[in-house]
Amino acid sequence: MTDDIDQILISALMEDSRRSLKALANLSGLSSPSVAERLRRLEERGVLRAYTVEVDPKCFGYQLQAIVRIRPLPGQLQEVERQIQAIAEFTECDKVTGEDCFIARLHVRSMEQLDTLLDKLNVLAETNTAIVKKTPVKRRLPPMA
Amino acid sequence: MTDDIDQILISALMEDSRRSLKALANLSGLSSPSVAERLRRLEERGVLRAYTVEVDPKCFGYQLQAIVRIRPLPGQLQEVERQIQAIAEFTECDKVTGEDCFIARLHVRSMEQLDTLLDKLNVLAETNTAIVKKTPVKRRLPPMA
DNA sequence: GGAAAATGACTGACGACATCGACCAGATCC
DNA sequence: GGATCTGGTCGATGTCGTCAGTCATTTTCC
Image (tube, rainbow over all chains, first blue to last red):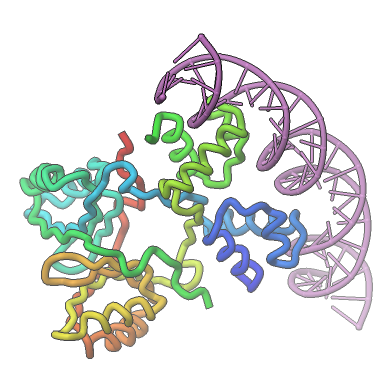
């Protein structure tokens, strides 16, 4: 389904998604039309979901990053989910099993802003906030083998 | 520092990092050499950290995704951090304030594998695992304005 | 078992693109 | 007020992506 060559292409694009077809062709030993065709198929099958860019939030003044665990008050689950989606400073959110219904990542410019945003949620849910001090593992792929 | 045109370029690349310079030029109203120069500077300043690709882990058999909170036993903090980095199935990890020292994302193919991996950590740390049921907010950028 | 069809690759030609140098306009600074 | 720096355009040149046509290999089906 995804063979060795696909994996070469995928990891090459993980490193630098702007690589030319020709460069990918050299890496994989194929011709560039073949590479184009393989990428097309990987996209079609949903293996490659998006070509994107990693931006440093600090450059936009987001000095603080927090992981927030969110436990909606009775009957507020739907509304909490909508709120999280509506607050643009939440940059990721997972709905999980266990006592905490949601675990979300929040980027803010200041403690004051953190407080303001969490107050909005605290009428609907209990929250538990952990400030990110360091990121020992940056986003990476699990082993493909 | 980063003006409107930079933001147009950045969000265009967020959507599709393989867009040609020419396409970016049309979007921004600049010429393609100017766009190239702006991208060069954004990379240099660390605003654009990487051009990358989003892959669907399910396509590699990773059916389960978990958020693991990790509290090292006394004296094991360093070793826990090393272990997390060494286990490739941990695809993200933040070191945070509060009782839980680390919050990490784990991709596994089965419950059995989840158990095996967590057992490795449980000699060094207490863990608390939440299985991801749904992702209401997919990774996105905080507002740039 | 063998013919037909489908798959996945290559090549070569052509149009689109990136890149480079030369040049220009406006802000900044002695 | 002229020198300089910044950030832009334009046009030429070489590289790249894409398309059509071809071919070998594998799969399917009678």
